[in-house]
Every structure is written in structure tokens, then in C-alpha cells.
Figure 1 (cartoon, one colour):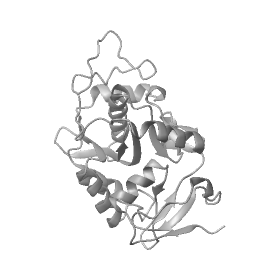
Figure 2: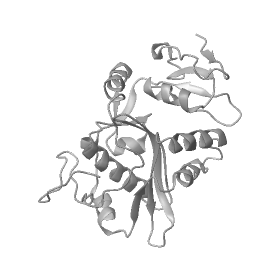
Figure 3: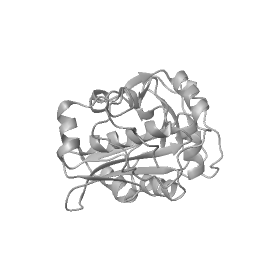
Length: 256
């Protein structure tokens, strides 16, 4: 079955129903169009995201099942807990969005390319300016950016896009800080898009696409945490027990 081509001029042109996405490759739904904020936000609300490489048309995906991570299901290993407590790192939100996306776009070991093209970088920076995209940054003791992640927030849903790590566990620490705050802010899950050994090891699990779409319909119109996001330094992330939503023997205030 052929996929639909979207009008690159009309950012209001409709996506096809996600049920029409191909099974092979899994989730490919449409091609073309543009990366305007209007189209991107409509795509995310419908469970669709762009993913393509330089030289390809914009490709739009809605895989089935969808990988999601609930804050209460996050797995923090003993070694990762030790990193949280002992590394002299500082974590921030929304302080270096463009640098974080650029770091995520850099070629990884064993790979010469990236799916985060210049057009993608510009598009998500525009979403950030409008308050729809967010970043988490991890800084070492010399104020060097060593890890982080970014994604899109709509209502009470966070759609994760990419993460990077220049020091072991730094991207995982960014994710832990984000999930701790999202749980406090009332966000039920993070969309991780596709399953991978890395994200699965942290507790991500598959969700049928129709159930994921229902979750979006129920939560995207709820009021989200206001932008810009900031780290609540009163939250004890180091001792957080995700399955309980609390830290032992510590009364937690409401997040800023």
C-alpha cells in the first residue's frame, strides 16, 4: 500500500489515520509536508512523529506498539544510584536547548550520520521558543555540558526525542531528573517512540497504538507545567523510589 504525500505548502493538510501506517517498515504513515510548529504539534497530538535522514523527504511515523516509560516503572540500578549520589554534576531544565539538540545530532560511535538534520534543529528550536519543547542538561564541575535530552511537551504528555551522553550515565541522570519532576507534575508517562535495549533497561514497555492514542486524547488537552521548566532543588532525586513516588523518610514539597 502506498503512503500519502503531504502538501509542503499547506501546513494544515491532514495526516491519514494512524491505522493506515505500514507494518513494514513498522509505522511509516506519510511523507513530505513541512516541519512548521503547527504541523509538528498536530502530528504529536495524533501519535505521529518525523524521522528521516539528510537527503530523504520528511517521513512521518506511528509505530505499533509504542514504547512508553511510566515514572513509577523507572529502574534505577545500584551503580546508577551511586552515580546520582556521588557525581558532582549539576542538572538544569531549558537552559541550553539548542546546544542539547546539537549534541544529540552529533554522529554516534559506529555511525557516520544523524537523523537530526539542520531543518529538524531549526524546527525544534522554534517549538522551544514557543514553549512547546524542553531540554534537560547535565553539567560537570567545570560547567561543561556532558549529557542531556530533549523532547516536546503537550498538555500532560512528554514526547521524548533524543538524548546524548559524553560521560557514562549522564543521559540516564537527565532522564531520572525529568521523570522525578514529571511524576510530581502529574504526567503519567514519557513517549519513547521506539523500543531499544537502552531505554528498555530503564523500564520502558510497549503500549498498543490504539491505547497510546487514547492516552493522548485524554491528556494532551490537560494543562501542562508552565514554560520554561526549572529544576526544583527541594526535590530529593537521589533517594527517590519511583514505584512509591516518594523518598524514604523525607517529606516532599510540591514541585515548582
